[in-house]
Image 1 (cartoon, rainbow, N blue to C red):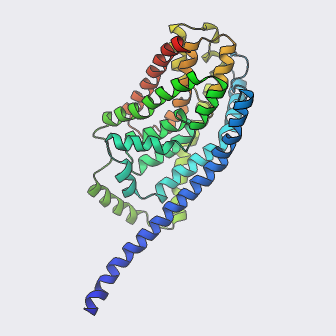
Image 2 (tube, one colour):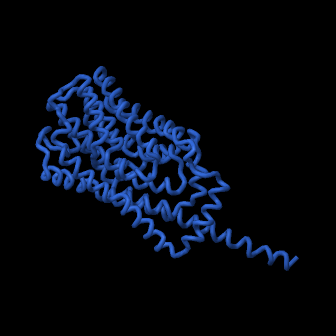
Length: 359
């Protein structure tokens, strides 16, 4: 009996150590995420909510007061400087969390919760996004990290889209600065985009989903043997690859859009279906910080932009952008990203048509 007991002990001990190590890693990830979001998002937004309630404004438009201007390198540099000044903390946090997802969170657990092609995983991915409150570019590295940890297309997309379009702080700001009608329109179309489009994209990606649990376990075991080494080394490798894959496309595309900002938003069109179509397309391509669509819409409507094009921007500006699509281009199938882009444009057009009647 003694020898049998001692023979079983070595087989059980590593499992206990693995569970303890996994638990420590998960807690560490949560501590870093909560601390980072508290500093970058939650506390600043708490103060901004009072500003929105009392002043009915959250600041000036990042595009400036003039809606038109020439295509120039100066405009590109000026916009990039203003943009990165606003987002750099959240961008650093997004890249940090995107790399830590790959080394701290257990792939088996992520697969079990977010790896299914069923709607449940997509729904949970969208719900988990709500505390993040990040813009599309800052959430993109985390979505890419989730995909590398075998999270399904639908859940990853729902997390990525839910961050900007269902941002609770933005909805509060919007209610005070614009109106409750804008907030309701954003909430309805944001839910359709986050959960509906993500789920349909998941169905579209059928055949390119994550492996079955048994296959995943074998792959994980092989990966662990191949990537043996200190945690710090594995994390630095993950961080380095993420920076290499994300930052160059991010910088160049922001500069490009900044150079063309003066011709992309022809406010003089006023309203009508042509303006709705154009602003839905431009809004899908253009990149902005979190909640920047609110002062942009506020300033554009003051210059004469109609309610329809404004509603199109309300949905498309925060959802995705050319930089964020480039940042996740290696993490999602091309047909999924094409479907997502088209869906955002179409929903922007529909929102513009609806907004022209109700706003």
